[in-house]
Amino acid sequence: DVAVVVFTSDLRLRDHPALHAAQRAADAVVPLFVRDRGVDGAGFATPNRLAFLADALTDLDAGLRERGGRLVVREGDVVEEVCTVVRDTGAGEVHLSAGVSAYARRREERLRAALEELRCPLRVHDGAVTAVPPGAVTPAGRDHFAVFTPYHRRWRESVRDAPLPAPRRIRVPDTAKGQGPPERGAVTGVSPGVPRGGETEGRRRMTAWLRSDVDAYEERHDDLAGDATSRLSPYLHFGCLSASELTHRALRHGGTGAEAFVRQLAWRDFHHQVLAARPDASWADYRPRGDRWRHDERELTAWREGRTGYPIVDAAMRQLAHEGWMHNRGRLLVGSFLTKTLYADWREGARHFLRLLVDGDMANNQLNWQWVAGTGTDTRPNRVLNPVTQGRRYDPDGAYVRRWVPELAGVGGSAVHEPWKLDASKLRAGGYPAPLVDLAVSRDRFLTARHRE
Ligand code: FAD
Image 1 (spheres, rainbow, N blue to C red):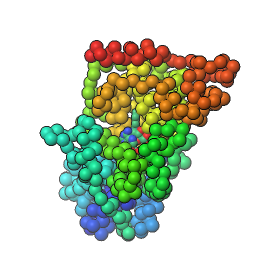
Image 2: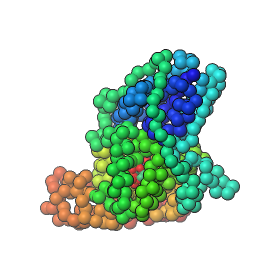
Image 3: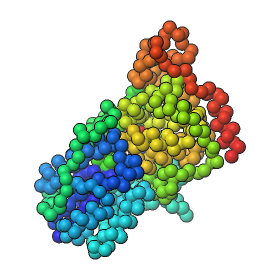
């Protein structure tokens, strides 16, 4: 008998509950990926993510071929394509990893209904996307945690141990028809610094990270120029790495660095369990505060293009455009700048991030934006980050700004954070913009608006 495994955000062979179950249930398996038109239609198929996805699928196909199989790629409506494969191969069951977003849930429901008509059960597996499935731990009388610290405590007790092995052999029936994986080279408009995707590359980076770099994580994770975080987020987003295995291995490595790192993995799960319980929070305020966001196209453009005149903000925005990735400290401070200093709608920021981030993710992006804007789960929703103070603290020598803002490359030390104080002769001609807004005035504007609610 034949089982189909529908791959989504779980593009790997190791620690894959759905694949593992399918292999045990049937003697032939169809590893299927559908290039879903619905995902394209939702604006989620952006060049940076498509490039990374092409690598991930190519790598998955190679891994399957080493085991005697192959990846079957099809394009169209995901439900129709899965049903076609079920009919062509006479499959008796379909396996899928549980998703969290509203889109993933709808996909699951539609698939279940369509497969019922074919008398082919859909088996949905937890444990592929997060280390602890959403809903596995809950506070008394509620369906999700809205505060991180108590969540973290319970999460820590629930992490699953030993990861599942990759299958040794896979037999794919000849009746399963599809294309091969897409090519990265065919994707246009990709940011120059987008890393290579795939499980092989993800595991290489995970191993290198856990060998030693993680030990300094606690002290160095906020150092913008030091760039001392794992950069594993795109691999986690596409499921090239299992969050559960990564957590397990980091805990086994031990030490304060690994503990701090695991705490960040818990943040990832925290946002997933919020979105699972409140799927509307992908675009609607989790906690509406009556904000009347300002819409100033000139300011928005300056923010997107990294020309606000605040060097640390501009450096981070330019890193995003160049790499399809931004340091977490950068994300926090450009987010605060947009939603509090400019008092612009967090959805504008979330949309821009989703266009460029390789790790762009419904749960992590939308709920972090809400956290930053104070419409989400931040317990101090009205704090405003000052870009000059932030620059001095997290880029004390100014090296991060000089790396990304060439107009200021000739300015030494932390003076780079306040270019308006510099002698004009120190600034290059064709130079750096003056500050877009006054920090004190905008802070008052925001706090007055929030206190009027
Ligand atoms: P590390 O510091 O090495 O952390 C390890 C892993 O923990 C990360 O890969 C990530 O999976 C997880 N993690 C770390 N911080 C967070 C956090 N605050 N929330 C949730 N998970 C976290 N992360 C995304 O994966 N996708 C997004 O679309 C995304 N959008 C964001 C938007 C804003 C406004 C903010 C403030 C944060 C956002 N983050 C997002 C969270 C965080 O910035 C990134 O996960 C992190 O910078 C990725 O780099 P890293 O892998 O080197 O992280």
